[in-house]
Amino acid sequence: MSEPTAKESIIGKLLDAPVKPGKVVWISVRPERRSPVKPLTEVDAIQNRGLAGDHYKGTPSSTRHVTLIQAEHLAAVSSFMNIPDLDPGLVRRNIVVKGINLLALKDKQFYVGEALLEMTGLCHPCSQMEEILGEGGYNAMRGHGGITARIIKGGKIRVGDEVYVKAGK
Image 1 (tube, rainbow, N blue to C red):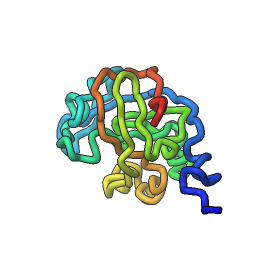
Image 2: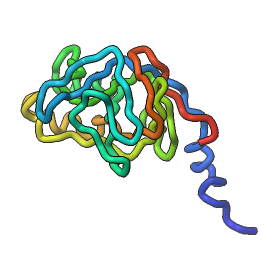
Image 3: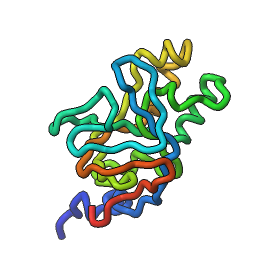
């Protein structure tokens, strides 16, 4: 009898288990490098590029077209830094979602509103977190910085839109 493949293993099956959908609760772009973020109620996700109005437009081969973070992680960072009601703009991510574990999207394609994305990696904190959040800000963000994603299919993303895994992937 042969050993089960990774997909057939218990862990493989758990990793392929359904992911409960979440919601977009905040959107922003940064018009220029190191500039403050500009909060929006909706944005166009441009296939193989990035978000309209964001200075960070990738190339088709780029792994960072958009950044996402969980609202639940903002609450953790807020607690670590003793900052009540941490403004999402301070952490400089494009999209804040609630109710979905972003790490469960690894190796999956997922919809954010009309746009189809694919997780490409973790979004680690930058040195600006120490400047923006104060002493300890960088370490407070470690493990809570969210993910990076590539835009597979463009479309509108609006506050209130659902975030869910594409069927069959």
